[in-house]
Structures are given as C-alpha cells and as structure tokens.
Length: 112
Length: 115
Image 1 (cartoon, rainbow over the protein chains, first blue to last red):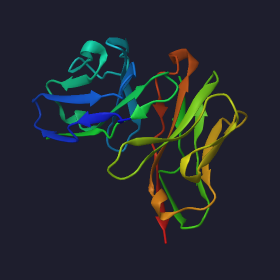
Image 2: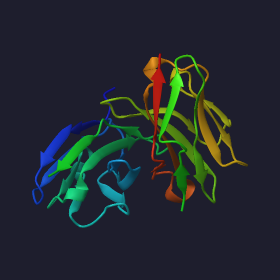
Image 3: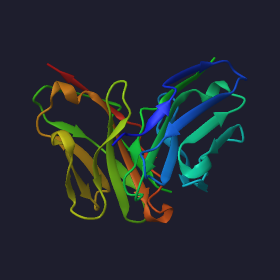
C-alpha cells in the first residue's frame, strides 16, 4: 500500500508569488489533514477534510491560504501571495478511522 | 485547550544506553497520545499510540511508553539506544472534543546517539 505522498518536496519562491502544494492520501482514507512546522517551533494543525468537505479549518493562518480537495481524493494547498513568515515544512496526513494519522514526507517551502 | 510539553530540545546518549524522552500533556478530558519519529529527510512515522486501552504501550523498534494519568505524562523509553535511533521525536495529543481529529504536537526532541 502506497503511503501519503506530497509534491513538491521543496519549493523556493519569492515574496508575493503563488505556490501550490499537493497531497495524495493513502487510497481509501476519507480524512485528510494539513499541518505546518515553522522553523524551530511545533507542528501546528491547519485544517481537516472529510472527503471533499472541510471539517475544521480553525488552524488556517489567514485568507492567503486556500485548501481544496475536489472529488475527495488529492488535496491542494495554495498560498497566494506568499509572505516570508509562510516559510516552513508543510505536512499532509490521512486516516481511515481518525484514530491514527499517517504522514507524508512534507514539502519544505522557502519564501525569499 | 490541550497542550504538550517535551522537556529538552536535544537529548544525547551513548550507544547501548537507556533512552528517555519526556512528554507531559495538559488536558481536561481523557486524551489519546502519540509518539512520532522523523528520521533525516523523511516524513513523520508513527512509533506508538495510547488510545485508552493498556497504559503501557509498545511500539516499533523497541520503543515503549507508559501513560500515567496522575503525572499527566507519556514518556518514551528504549532500554538500549542504537545509532539508527538518531532522529527527532514528537509527542502529540488529541481529544474527544475534537473527535480525535486534531493533533497537538510538542516542539520535538532531537535524539543524538554517540558511539
């Protein structure tokens, strides 16, 4: 069984540009989560999808962040326009039964 | 609101020595607790979890953790460290009032293993 995959593994952009991160969950997992780790700090929850619906987006920092999960399969997280403080590692996770979340390798975003 | 505290951003041990990584949580309701590990250039891997069954939980690679409600702790241990255990370890909690959906993480502890 393939694990959670994320693309790209690393992205370097300039302030003001747009970046889209992609997450492919484990097949059959209805729950999909986004987390972020800013350098030196804890991993923080961003939002949770159940299939294509946003169940909880209480962790989204501001309206520059837009997450979608059309069709209930893969998800994208768009940052537009990117700011310096958006730099960090963005993790995606998925779960079948909500008791165990399986994480992807993360996307390291650097905003210059 | 729940929170997780991991004491020590870095822990150094010698190969063969006991590994003890500390985790304390704050919660007003019974939690689920997790330890994840991140090896260099890899994602987060689940080591073990406590979900209200046995308080002593065994995980992969010889690690175990004990849930102690009276101490609000969930410390991670391994009797004998191996060089391959060098990684960053994260303790996390989730609660019934979030449907156990939202993980709250500690700041992580980097384990260094010397020969």
